[in-house]
Image 1 (tube, helix red, strand yellow):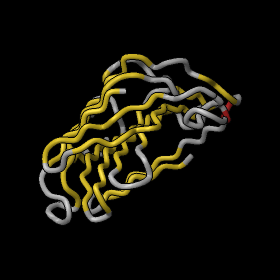
Image 2 (cartoon, helix red, strand yellow; image 1 turned 120 degrees about the horizontal axis):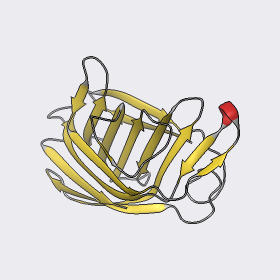
Image 3 (cartoon, helix red, strand yellow; image 1 turned 135 degrees about the vertical axis):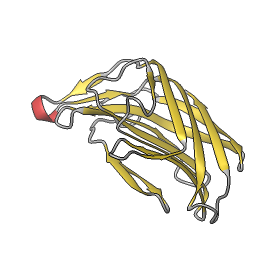
Image 4 (cartoon, rainbow, N blue to C red; image 1 turned 90 degrees about the horizontal axis):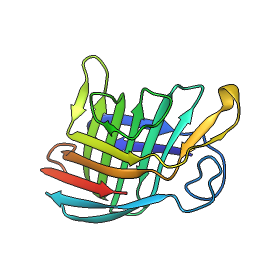
Length: 183
């Protein structure tokens, strides 16, 4: 599965999770329903967006965990992706102190986008803020061996909060939007 978050005027943060299987959210062969949630948005734009796909994956050859909340493919939509410099997902709080990349993206329509971006580079790129607290990482499923090993965490539970800014600044989307997701 490949997911790319496009952020106008800020840059592009693309992520790919290579996980096979069927059912659930497509990760690691789980066949039941994956975690789902609803994003509640307040501020310059308000509303709710269903989040039908929430998953974490580790690709042994890459050495990091990719965590995604993937909204519906039509407007309005909300997506969150983060990359953690660990090989196992833990029930803890993730923010800019223990994350290498994170992007929140809310698109009301093609010309109205709010975004939060964090890249742990030198100097760090930081637009908006985020906090992801995992209360449970569910039951991980591992497939493959060696460099082809992939672990999926499809049944995670927790909360996400993020403050997003209009992108590009002042064009199409103005002000800030706060999002809260419980899953």
